[in-house]
Amino acid sequence: MVNQIDQEIGGRLRRRREGLGLSCATVAKALDIDVALIESFESGERRMSARQLQQLCGVLDAPPSYFLVSDSDFCAPGGRPGERDALLSDAHRLYRAFFQIQSPELRGVLADLAEAFAKGGQSPALVQAAQLLRPESELEDNIAQLRAFRSGPWSN
Image (cartoon, rainbow, N blue to C red; front, side, top):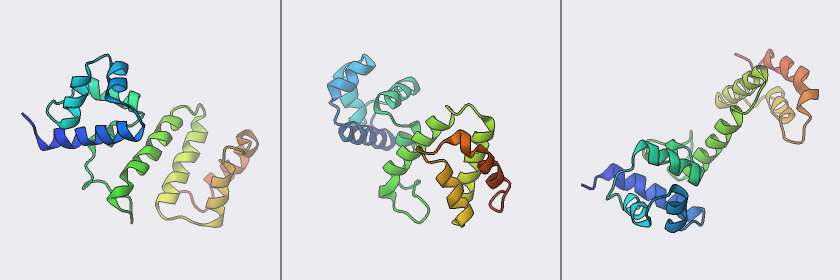
């Protein structure tokens, strides 16, 4: 039985697959399932299991929320629902990178920065702290400065 939620999830699956330039056959092969099953997921005729969704997330490099959060429920602060895909993609990148950071202190600094920016912080000190985290920066050389910023005026 076709239901609206399955159709919405299937539509997101199709958009993500096509956006990555992947065919149904490519995705089906990566998951070791039939092409017809991918097509039935995309049309909403079949419901995928949690395991299949998890596998799809890996193949399509998208978090589960990409498929499960409805457009009407998701909108960036001050943004439009059409920004959903870009925001979820950035959130997924951040999530994956965060768990690869070995230093608990650095994870705390990043969480503090994210919270400060989310609260609308645009102070010069906050922007300077964020600049210290740019990929071309030497993080080891900047740890002392990050510690100072963490206890500075933008901390909680």
